[in-house]
Each structure stands twice: as C-alpha cells, then as structure tokens.
Length: 401
Image (cartoon, rainbow, N blue to C red; front, side):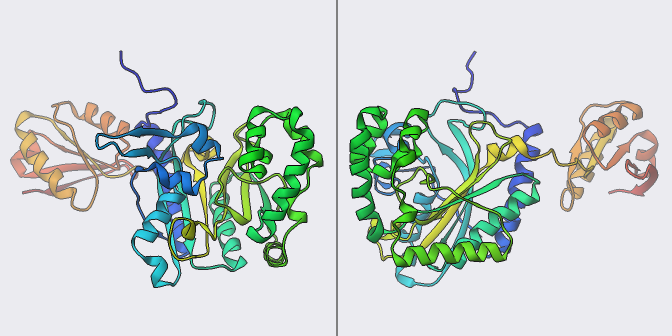
C-alpha cells in the first residue's frame, strides 16, 4: 500500500471545516487592516532563498527540498513565504513606483525537518507583508493584527520582542560577539561553531541547552543599538504600552532568517509543547535591495495554520442547503433538475438512490442539510416537491418545472 510521505498530511473534510474556518477569519481580519491577497508559486529558484533567508540559516543549510529540474535549473519547494512575495514585488516593479503596498497570502510551505507535534514537512502558513512604511507605527499595526487573530480564536499567548538593529550597530556588535564566542568555542556545538564564522547572532537561535547556558553571559544587541534603532524600538514599546498590550523583551529572539532588522517578534503559546511559536515576524528593510531592487522598507509575519488547528476549537456546525431524495425512479430526473436550479443560490446534495421517506430524512440529517426535499409518486402527479425545514420542523409543498 502506498502511503503519504513522512511529515506530509492529508486534510479530510472533518479537519477542512476548521482549516477553512481559520483561513476565512484570518483573511477577513487582514482585509480590515488594508491587506490584499497575493499568490506566488510553490517552486522558486534556489538562489532566491540563499540570498534572502541566508546560507547560514538552518532552512538553507539543512531543510530545503532542493533539486534540479529537467532544464537543469536549481530550484526548490518554497520553505517560507516572504522571499517569494518580495521577488514578485520586485518583478512587478513596485519598488520603482513607490507608495505603500500591503499583501496577505496563504498556502503550503516545505521543510525537511523531523516531524513532531505542530511541525510537518509540508505545512501551511498565513502571512502578511507590508512595503513602503518605515515607521514603527506599521510594526505596531502588524502586531495588532496578529493579536486580533489570536484573540478571535481565543488562543492564549505571550508576545516576545527584540530589536536586531541595522548595519550600523550590527557590524561592531558582531565583532564583540565573535570575541566572546572564541573564548567559549570549545564548549559550543558544531552548528554554533559554524555559525560563529558565518552569522554569529544565529547562535542565540540554537536549541542546544548546553550552548544556551554558556551564552547567558554573551553581549546583547539590544544594549548596543545605534540611536535610530534604539529610538525606533523604544517608540514601538511606548505605543504598545499605550494600547495596553503586554509583552516581554527577549534578547535571545533573533528569528530563524537572516533578512530581519530592527523589530523582531514572536507570539508564543503554552498549549503547543516544544514547538510553541504560533506566529512570528519582523522588519526587513534591506531585503528588497539585497535582491537587486530599490531599497524599500518592509515588515511581515507568518502564522502556522497547523499549529492554530491544534488550539482552535471546532466551529459549531450549522445546517445549510438542501438534500434532495427520490421515492421512486421516475422522480430522479425532475429532482436532478430542481437541484440544479437551487444551486444558483444555495447548496444542494442529491441522492440518486430511491429510498423511503424515513431513510431520506435520516440521510439529510447526516448531511447536516437545512431542508429535506423529496419527490414521490404523489408529488409527481401534482408536479410538486415536498420540503421539510429540519430546523423549524415545518413542512410545505411547492410547484416545480
């Protein structure tokens, strides 16, 4: 028997209800904030993620589904959504046009990781990206949108914040950090030894408990911010305070991608176990220019849909549409034609099996239909259809044809 690949999951109708419910409401909230839907391909050039996510990241180094296609092109299944949206933004020359652009997206992402609760090799993300606004107000706007989404689904969380600075403050900080790492190098894991030479701040993202113990005395970037980054971060915190949004400053929060600068944030939920980040993002003001376009301030976030599904309560199922059933063979054709009319405005399910009225009522109840519509010999003779409202328990007949 052929089965689904490890870490890749089928989503059946029973789960789809929750999946669609989550997407529908996240989309509605994003549109309230002025975001519009964008869709990018699942396959992209590998170079896009090497240049944006960064070669030092675990995503590029360990997790990408990367291969050569029949044209000998180096391509991969997208491991995250931001880089593709930025590539599309540049390809449409929006960077040259100027102005403000806000997009949301959703769809499957792919990473070759060890599957566990809340983590799959094919997973789905909902994300939002904003281009053209450098103000900390947009940082707060994105955080507020995530908060509204999680509050809507009644998910408990802790908001963690950090500033990753900019090139001006990051360069001297990295030198200071490398000096510290050299002193404790023999105590670090192999990944952190590699990170020391490629992107030293990535050591704070290490999950090795021994490394984290040795890093407790490491210098922190938020104590070495330049004036502009310090003002940006403090202004964001003051705005969140005015909105009475609780948060924790986490100097270890560096996110898993190389393109972030200034504000970085994560929403952590205690209901998820080890994989407890339900949403995260940050500012990436240099990414558009890194990919060869005009420098454009930008900020974005992503939410793991499978992780939300672990916590979101099943929406109450409401009866909807019509169930059509035949009591005799001759009723099937007029029943089919009547259902086709109904589908112009409502849902309609047709049973092609001739059954008793009792059996059809039972089937319509199982289908969660609002109405059970039946045609038998008596109804055929009168050119009518019998309809029962399964909510109000009322009955009526109406003419057909």
